[in-house]
Image (tube, rainbow, N blue to C red; front, top):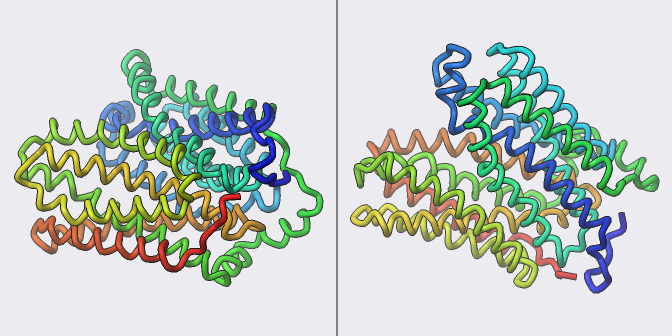
Length: 404
């Protein structure tokens, strides 16, 4: 796929169909990732296990992202389209397995397979779009693709809730299996092939994970990009894991406040993605991302001091989530240009950095809150400080890109 200049006609029917098919495939994958969250209790009851068993399965699924630097690079060898289609078919088959066998052990295996599928699919589709879309239009397309994350919860919650209420968990897996198979078919039919014979030798060489690690570590902008993602995710996770406890202590409105914040988070995700779609290509992904990070860092600092007003606290949290989503999504097109000859390697490493940041941030955030006897101001200072570090990395250490 030749990366045309943005001054030339680009969004023809074939390209649009390719992008829409990729986004549909990712929407279904995200539904498989998000459907358990609202129904932990119901799923636990279906297997007669404690609720924390299901929470641990969700954590295991999320932890699959740590394998991204190893697994996410396989498209450099086999090709983007083949890997995307293969992951959707693998998940469809595993989901069918979950539908046939109503067993907790099978459920664990199926959910972990879902995590592996997303771990491989996400950097592959990001690399594909990096290959296909000119840099000057890439933020818009990346923003559209990220809408599938917010929309997946809109689909997952009512559909899974209806099926669990009127049938059982196996019917949810049937729905997922059919949807994933449709996604695989859509990609196979509509996505343009990315087979490039001139790159075959390069793919064989780069498939070695140790070679991939050396490729990233030998390129300073790539290392700084991963540090940015790590600091961003650390700051957000340290704050995110503790804000519910703070709201409970400050306002005593646990269900009302947290329920409203959950709705606000979903809306904020959509708004952040639309900001990237409409603004990032004009301002540049780098400026958009570091601006979002700076706003988020300021929110981390000030929110702990808003315990006197629930509306102000809710508003600040809402702005913080918009800023975080904007900073994450607008960084993606920038990162696809850091190692243009090894895009899947770079995006896999980036996904791994985010996953590691979530794991370490959750553990560190819990430890800080417990060790400080619930000092949420300290939590805000640490999160804000890490956010400022991320801002400085993006501002001073990552290269400018010309929106051609």
